[in-house]
Length: 325
Ligand code: TXA
Ligand code: MG
Image: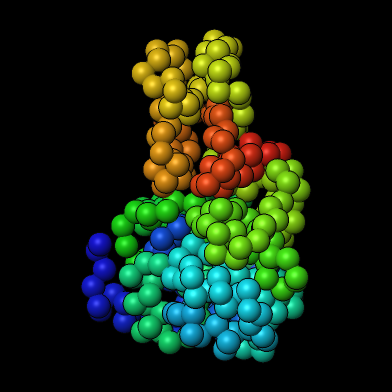
């Protein structure tokens, strides 16, 4: 951890002055602004190259502050907030008047979460208000899980980068819509469906693999520069070698069962067998393939249970059609 108290105070000052601060969370790094300052929020969209209709998450300092940001807190939301916050869970609720429409992309709902990272919590406490923060990457690309990723990608666009070390969860928060009768997962993430269902004592819906429900969740999200292609685990090696023979510089995410297998490809990384370790490393691995000059990445989907659901979701989106060539 490379953050001292004076850094926190300086970052809070930048936020108060309407500037942008990159901050670590347990999931990925965020690009933060004062949630109540429409001009500061507008700067986020500009720095990311993100369409202004894509809603942001408002980060707050504790579950006890939730009522200040939303119109009402249904019992289900209260239960989830008390159980999972601070943590990688985002709740979508009806927007309170304190939240400007700029932050919600014009929606009458707002996404709120309490991040589980000492630096983020210290900044929220020092700042006192809500911090609206998307992942600190350019629109459509891989989310940053280290401060170096943020500097490399956004550099001068950020007033201040708080370096809180590598993110422990590594994929974004789980977004749950609690505005209706049945809570629904809009984006799988760091809190698993199984954990949610255990606490609620009822099933939670998940979007089908191809169905895009959340604004800002285009298929091409979370993509490295290299094209990503999905393969069945037992065919991944053969497909990687074939593509390499055809002149591609292939990066292969080797399924754990094949660890140590000799593969004729440009870059081969064995995927961790543990899902938390895989989630933690996923975005770094995708960036590493770009750094090593791969133009094609071949990956297999893990079983879609537990954290595997979020990992598979990100790999599918990374492999989805690109917005621009
Ligand atoms: O883990 C995370 O959630 C990270 C860290 C920085 O907190 N943040 C993050 O933000 O992933 P972003 O902007 O990259 O993704 C936020 C997602 C978007 O897909 C957006 O569509 C969805 O949250 N979202 C925000 N407000 C919403 C709303 N009112 N209704 C539905 N979806 C919403
Ligand atoms: Mg993002």
